Each structure stands twice: as C-alpha cells, then as structure tokens.
Length: 629
Image (cartoon, rainbow, N blue to C red; front, side):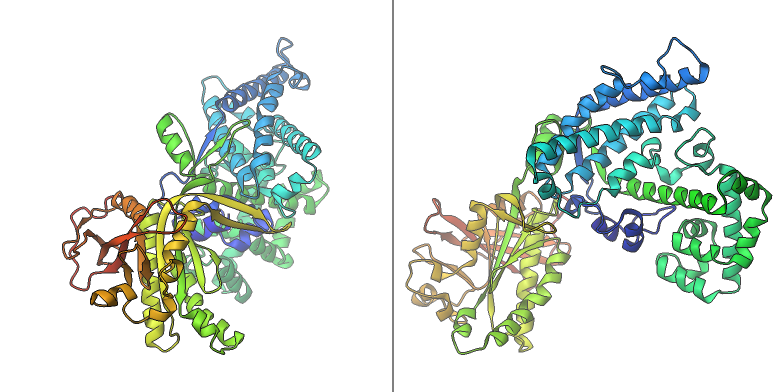
C-alpha cells in the first residue's frame, strides 16, 4: 500500500491527500501488505487477477436473494422469503459462503506474507461492486434498497472469513500465524466488509452522499441534512481562518496537504479534501466559542442531538462517515491498478502471464501465483578486495572501503527498478523481475550495469576507491523464495541454476582451472591476451574457455531477450560479431560485443559471452527504437 501511493503522482483523489501518515490513520500501522512490486506506473496490466467464475455467479444470486428478502419485508408479501430465513441450508447465502470458503483456505495456505489475501479481497470487492451496479441498473429495481442489503452481505462475508480462518488454524496449528505474521493488518479487509461503500460504489470518488445517506441505510447514522449543516459550518470556519491567516491552521494545512498550493486552500475542491481531514476538523471543532457555539445554536442539529445521546454521538457519527468515505476512496484508487481477467484475456495470454508471475489465480486448491519465473540477475564483485584484506588493513578500513562503493550503488539500482537481493561481502546480487515486474527488465539491468561501472570510474578518479568491479548480467528462469525469519520479517531471494550461472559469470580467471588469479592481473593484460600480444581488455575469453572479467559480461540468454525489446543493428566494428542499439534513456549507442564462449565446471554447456559498453562517438538513433515500451 505504501509503495503504491508513494509511486503514483498521477492520482487525483477527492477526499484524501494520500500521504503515508494519513493512510496509517485510516488503516493502521504497518499498512496492509500487497504484492506492490507490480504496481508500476504506466504498466497496463497492473495486478492481473483471475477470480473463480462460480464466485461471481454465487454473489449475483446472493444480491438477488438479499434484495427479494428486503422487498418482501417492505411489501409484507408473504409469498417471498423473509430476511430471517434467507440464509438457511441450500440458500443463496449458504451457497455463496460454500464457494468462498475453499478459496480463502487456499489463499491462507499460499500466503507467506505476500499480500495475497488482501489482493483477493480488493479484486473481489471490485467485481462485487460491478455486480451490484449492474443489478440496481435494471428497470423496476428500487435503488434505495441498494444501501439496505449491506448488512446481509456483510454477514455472509464474515461467516466465510471466520470459518476459513478457524478451520485453517485448527488443521495447521501455528501455520496461520507463520503465514500471515504476527503484525498482519486486517483493517483493509474489515473496510471492504464493513464500510459498505467499497461494495455499493464502483467509484467512491464520484460519490453522491445524498443517495447514500438515506433513512434506511443502517451503516451510517448521520442524515444528509445533518451532514450538510455540519459541513457548511465547518466550511465557513475554514474560510474565516484562511482570511485572517490563522497561524496554527496554516501550519496544519502545510503539513497535511503538501500537494495543495496555499493560494488554493479556499478553492471548493481543495476545501472538500481539507474538511475531510480529521486533524483539521478536530482543530476547527476545538474553537468552542466560534464553530462550537454555531453548531449548538443550529436548530436542525440541536433537535438531532436531542434525539440521540447528545452532541458527542452526533459528531462521532459524522466523523465515522468521513473516515469510511476516505478509506473507501483509498481502496478505490488501489483497485484501479487491479485488472480482473475477462474475455479480453485469452487462455494463451493468461498462461503466459501466469508463467511470468504476473497473474494471480484465486481458485480452490490451486497455485495462486507462479514463483518460478524469468528473472534477470546482476552479480557485481569487487576486484582486488581479497588482496587488500590480506594486506594488513583493519576491518574498520575494509568496511569503510565497502561503504564508499555500496552506499551510492543503492540509488542506482532503485532508479532502474531493480532490487538488491543481498550483499555478499565484497559483492552484491541484484534482481530484475523477482519483486518488480516490468517489460524492460533486461534493458534496465544493462542500464544498471553501465551506471555501476561509471560510478566506479568516478570513485577511482576521486581517490575514494582503488577497486575495480566485475559485473555479470544473465537472464533465465529462477524460483522466487520467501523465507520466514521471525514473526515480523521475511527474507526474499531467488534460487536456481540460472542464479548460479550469473554468479559464475561475474567471476574471473580464478574460478577456472587456469592457474591464474584475477587479483594478479587487474589493470594489466589478462594472461591469455598478453600471450597473444593483443591490447588489454576488461572482458576476455581465452582459447580454453576461461573468462576474465573486470568489465561487464552479458550472457547470450540476456541478449536474446533484449533483441525482443529493442531494434538492434549488427556491430560492424566487432570482429567476432555483436549488436548495437540506441537507448532513449541514456541517449547513447549501447554496444554488445561477442568475445567468445566461456566454459564452467559443472555447467553442461558453454555460454556465449558479450562485452557491454557504450559507443564514444555521437549517437545515431535506430528507427523505431525501442521496439516495445
């Protein structure tokens, strides 16, 4: 949740500001978990979800049964079921709960703190809101009953939710706590079940409170007339404070509404968002001599307060409405990034996205998300570190040397949407496609590798390090693993053969039976190159298939994936062949020069090696490059 709101500058909320502080007030801290790595701005699919078809059908029957029960009660039609008997055995309510129960059980089994349970409820609530809208758009359907069916739907949801949790806990013991974590936040699920609006409104941003706050709506106890009177009084008090530039009010607005310019505070659109903020509202209501007396003197509110237990209950009902509206809008904004797979997604497309880890299937007894997927891995190792550590340098100095390199590295990785998987002493492992799935993982990995070498050159020139770095980029299928560390934290990594290959590619001659150590030839021609009388290279493969690397190595597998992303031209200057393309982001020609086939002990095939670099001369963009966004 946090990542979604922090990365979406394009959001235009009506009632909330979308700050982390505000979200924590609405949903608690830590915020509910979601598979947020895929909520990437500009990605069309977002979080693609496949729901069980039977669930939608069962929910449609549930809505129809709830409506008929309420209509029968209203008309006293004895021929239709009464609300008290609508949920018996074999009823639509019972069938819906029986359909939902095994789906929830499957999700709990697969959860492992991935945010799957929250994602399911988000997706289902979006689908449910569409079903309710379709139902109440039918001719002859009484629209005011839309807000009376919520308690009946809420009961079915809570029954299925409690039943699945109890059954799983009984069968699996501490597995529920282990899978969810002791800090699992249920507030998002409770909002979807209890706040009504996420189910009854397709888009709470276009909410019409006059339609919602009907007399028969049992969820909200404040009437539309009461809301208007309180809101109007608060609006007038806000305007007065702005006109006299109330210092505390202005500071409160500055801290809580960073997206609103001060000259727009009195704009109606901005004022609506401001007056839905609980901190601002509490400040305004604290003005007992001004706003307080005005509310007490309002004849409409005075009568309503008398009918209740007093003013405190009236104001609590008002605040409850504001909080529910804001939570519902936050839910709606996140739901916009959730796409429910429909007829427009063919079976082949669904299968492809599932294999990529980009489709979540919420079906009974089914794998929810594929954790084996195509991943691009970077290994970056410092050259010369072993020799330095054995040369009498203290541990403190060694640590300082590592900080000089690895501290600026983190921002480079984040810029290109990678994820630091782990630090390995004098190296680092970076992944693309494991946590944040994008369509440019291979391209972003190359950009990261080039930026890392540029960083190393700058550090050496400034005298901040004497190390060089060997970098490898490899793409292949790997397994994403989520290890439980304790009740609060998880360790996420990728494992498998292709990860091992990426690690081997970042090594140098020392990993082969060549008799040479990469620490011995750093900054000098590699042994094989020196023997052949050729100029020094940062990446080289000798006749025996031994790889020497103080530059950037890219595997054939990564190059093949890259060719699907960009329009490449042959690298004419390279004797062994290769590719070049113009990168719009770097505004440079990127060169991939084939240098030979490397052989590794324990790897059944040789691996074609490409040296990655940038062209020095003026770049010449390729027509239509890149091929895919």
